[in-house]
Each structure stands twice: as structure tokens, then as C-alpha cells.
Image (tube, rainbow, N blue to C red; front, side):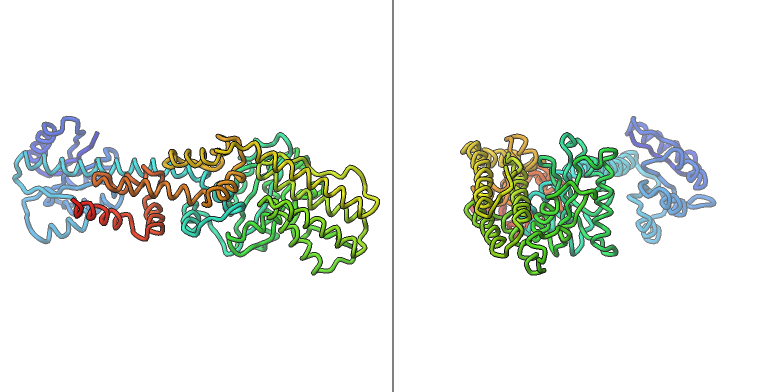
Length: 520
């Protein structure tokens, strides 16, 4: 229902307009005001959508009244009613945002048409606002899916530059030139606290939270420019651990990777956060990777320490890629080096256990059900250490192979088909993982290996190809197409389309329709 206020110092004019509008728009709610001062008083309580304002009135004239009302109520629309058809009045009225005017005397048909046109404009604006609110709600609902997918892709795959810049903007995160990863480990049975951890990060306003796999939550944290790395990381770790409440010491731990310069390098920091989480029995329930002690020998040099950490990263990459011959060669090389340097056998075995633990954690994150590695006895010499370590590597390899063997041959093809059929929806790796019973990390890896394309790139291709087909229908607006193919922001859709097709949606549609005309 619309509300109209008629402002005119002549009673007969007010009543005449009132009668005409009542007949033309039976549902209108109409009130009257005899002058500008009364109009100002009525506006606050009545809140009209449209005001029919006489220009020439005693005291405060119509233009002055519009100016004062508009200052507090910018959404009201005005139709000026006047016997003056002069340029100066028209210029002032346009400046104040007046939508139309009626010359006295006006025919009933002209009055109804003019008011009807303004009411239609208001109705269209309301529909547009309603759609915008629904879009914002849908976008807000989709953001957690976007966030977890981006974290998964960054840590286990490559996000194409076409999408990375836009996704960062879409997530509206205050990013910095530097970032790092925190890996949160929850105690068994505490998976329900995932949302509490995510809320802590949201309150800090400096990071993205990935999907929870097993009992582990990866978090990409953006550096705060006016704060040291360690201060920021400790503060956030303590905030996250506060979600544990009374059970803080029972299984909670936060591993903190080193700082890297770009999102393309973030996987290294993630691997470091895993290595920092190897020993969760310490009194302080967080550790920086740079503080992880090296146990090569009591006199380990800085160069040896750096080399050891580099081997950890290579081991993780080999496990992730399923290169088990390289994994075995790597760990055996480490044992041989310890033996050559005369390192303490107990410390060497402990160090190997830590390396194998990191490998098993990587398998767990990929969805492989691998038991934590354990030496059945303390080796008496390096020959025994090599043999026992080889058996543990074989068990990890068998768990990896068994997991792959359970995967139906057409699983990835079924996932591909699902994405093609549902690309217009807010789908995510996490949701797909639940559908097929696989880890999102594992799906991301297999998707790239078997199809040769990144998951996000493939989803985008599906949406862009569908958009191209829909553009052949000249009756569909680009905004309608944006939402129909699965995007929530027309500007974001336009940017992605142009980067993928080297033409804007408007330019592509124009060329498409022109080509169809020429072929007829």
C-alpha cells in the first residue's frame, strides 16, 4: 500500500486531487496539509511515499518545504503542482529531486497518469531493493563455502590467478603482504567445537578457516601490519584455546607455521604448522615451527637444521603426491646421515618417529585412514632402525593403496557430472566430500590428477559456458543470467567472464546476437 500527502493552501484544490486519486487508486492512503509547516509535521508520523506539493503557498513555499523534508526523508518522491510553467521553477525542482510536475488546472487523466508513473517507479525500486537484500543474504550464506574451498585449494592445489584476486575481494578480508598458517588439533569427541574456533577467528578479523578433517582445522592468518608475527600468533592461539574451556589441556594444540610472502606460497607454511604439531604433550599448547628443536645431534649447526626442515617439506610433498619410492629413499637417507655423523641412536629413532608422524598426519588430512606410526622396540643398532622404519613406511603405503583401491573407478567422473548439473548452486568440496564419503583434500588432489584441471577452474568453466548459452536468449537480462548460473554478484561475474573470455558479458552477447542475425 502506498501513502500520498497532498500539500496545497487551497482547500478546493486539495479535495479535488484527493477525489481524483481516490477514484484512480482505491487502495491509496491519503492525507492533506494546508501549508508547508503542517506538511513538515505530518511527514514524521504519516511517512508518505509521494507528496503532491503546491509551489506557491503563503509562508514557506513548496520548494522550501521540499528542501527541508528531503534533508530528513531522502526516499520520499515529489510531484510539484503549480500554475507556473517557468524554467527557473523547473530548474530548482529538478535540483531537489522532484520526479514530475502538474500544471494547474490538470485533467483527471493527467493526474492519474503522472501519479501512477511515480508509484510504479517506487514499486520497481522496492523490488530491486528486495532482490538486493536476498542477494546479500545468499552471498552471506555462501561465504563460508567459498572460504573453506579457497583454503582447501590453496593448501592442496593451485588457485588460478583469475579467481584468487576476485575471491579475496569477495571474502572481504583485510589481507596483508604476509601470512602464515595455524593448524588447530582438537581432542577426540570435540568436533562440535569447530564453529567456536571459527567464531574466534571471525572476531579477530584476520583469517580464513578451512574445513575440519579428522580433528584438525587449518587456518590461513593474515599479518597485522602494526604487530609482530609472534605477538599476533600467540594472541590468536590463546583466543582459540580459550574455546576449550575447562578441558584446555586435554588434546588441544595449535601448530604455527612460518610467515610467507604470498598466498601462492602458503602450502609451505601449512606443512610447517603440521611439523610444529608433532608433540602435543608440552605444557604450552601452541608451538612455532621455528621453535621445533632439531635432534640431529647435540652440536647441530644452523645449516643442518635448515636442511632437516627442508627434508620434512619434501617428505610431505612426496606423501601428498603418492611418490612412495621417494618417501622411502628420503627416510633412509636421513637414517644413513645420522649413522654417518655418529648421532645418538635413541635421538635418531625419536627423530624418525617424528618424521613418520608428519607423513601419517598428511595421509589423515587426505582422507586416508592411517594409524599413527609406532616403533615396537628401541633399535639396538642402525641396521635395526632401518628395518623397522622400512616396515612403518610400508604400512603407510599400504594404507594409501587400500584407500585408493576402495575408490570406485568412476567416482571422479560422477563428481564431475554432479558439478556440471549443480554448478548453479552453492556447492563446495566439503559438501561433495560428504556426498561421496571422501575428504575434500583428497577430492581436490584426485580431480587435478585424473582430469588435469583445478576444481574451482572446472566449476567456473561450467558456469561461464552455461552463461554463454543463456546469452543467446535476448529476453534474459545479464543480472538474471548472473544468478541463474550460480553467482551472487553481477560485478564479480562480469570480471570473471571477461578474464575467461577476453570480452565483457555485454560485448560477448552483442557479438553473439550480431552473428546470429548475419547467419539468418
